[in-house]
Length: 321
Image 1 (cartoon, helix red, strand yellow):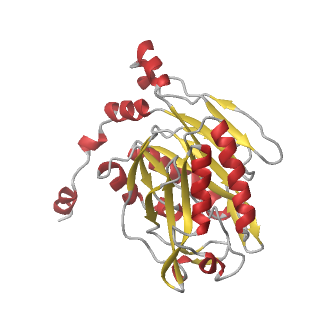
Image 2 (cartoon, rainbow, N blue to C red; image 1 turned 45 degrees about the horizontal axis):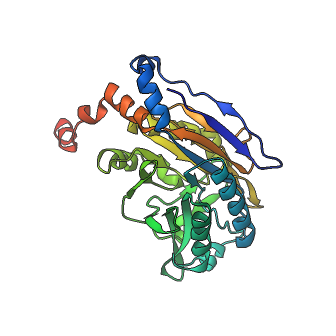
């Protein structure tokens, strides 16, 4: 099987880099030349953005607009943006003040980007107007290539953490947690939706895979520099391996303001846990590109049939007695 990967960085210039991922020998040996040819023709190109959002809606939109156009020209059918793509506040209360309903003017502009470039967009998380004036929803929005919102997921696990050597975060002070698990069909397969801190809770991804049929997991994020250095890639590869799904992780990167810095390192990972695309500079603005082939998902799952071998919850309840 062949996958062609590109990494594009738009800061300060566009650069191209090709990669060939390492496919497990046991899987490669099981594929005939004809099968490899079929798999190559069935691949779909995706892109994962990396950016440094600030407290300026117009400036962030300009960056996103440029990335959408470049990704579409690169042949991507889906472009994934990081958490807080449209806005990162500089002080407490900023995010709640800019929050809008999904049919508001901010989201409409992003839907227009998808429609104008005929590309699907993963927009997450967006500051959606919440249940009261003090809270918003951190919402992952999927927009199709006609500009229509086809699915939304509200972030379930909120970032209430005292980061070692860093600041104290309490996302729940201004964000209402979601309650629903969401998967949706798309041209690149069945997408499992999540946002950032959800990554630390594997049961969500297990449910997305085994109960909701996910083939590709989307993890838009804004990991802190400290937690990103320690855990970002490890957690993403673990989620890919244990779910046997592709993982697309679009990341915020760099210094947003005097209080906040994000780790970056946008990644695309295959269902064997191999990083198949990343930007050459983890703090630059740009996007990683990969050709996703669901035949690899099927092959990995067939060779290692964990869906059939995993135990139901009742087994573990009895085993703990």
